[in-house]
Image (cartoon, rainbow, N blue to C red):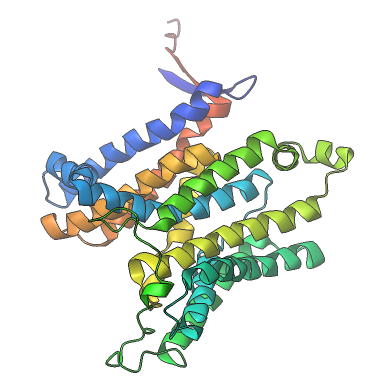
Length: 358
């Protein structure tokens, strides 16, 4: 028997949408093998990690809280990826958005009669856009790789965060812990569902998905992004400016990442701490590709990756598994996602080898 890879005449529409589902299935199978190797009963471990977090009102609400920043960041990244603008530094833009938003909250710390969180929203967006503008400038002015520059700026943003929480913004009543003061009620995102932690950031994520869908499907700008990514020479012939689209992609991606950072500070976390850097900006890359770089697909991809976070925390408590189990599952998913995408352009052919004549 011989297995060969044959190019398809055109991209398979079926496998474009089926490959993420196959990748998820293969991830579950591989995760079961990993759990067995760790001495855990595979089916029980899969149940604890992928099903138990969905049970109950609290677990279901936490899923949307965890998914909201992933969705916001991934929608912004998807727009850039479609134009072949590879913003890998969304984590740094997410941190800078949180820093700018926290700065506003601390500046108006004594104000209680005005919803300060309204001012924090543009501050978070501007913080992310500012950090995204740096690799955009280096790309368009000096042709520097946005992959490297945006990624390296993530470490600069993280060090800036550490400087602030152990230096000028350190909570004087925080017993020496590296953190700012807790944000006031005026600087906190409103909770929408009584008895849960669902806040305005969840609604903002859904609005971002809707706006992203409209931009890609119904606007000339979305058409330009697709053409530049799929046929650069045709885009140049049509007069589409790759320079302008590079700036747009980095600013939109950075702004949405900064918005996600703002809502994390004003919502679940409630203050600026080193724990803010959870890797959401990197995980959102997986979300973007799992969602086929489409805002609606990103919505479902964000829920899947959010479930992996919640399931990983559940598995640590219930099964005593290491914290790395979450990253392992996310890494396996990314590996299979990239591997299964091969089926979009190629067909696997199995043939039986004929016996040679004696």
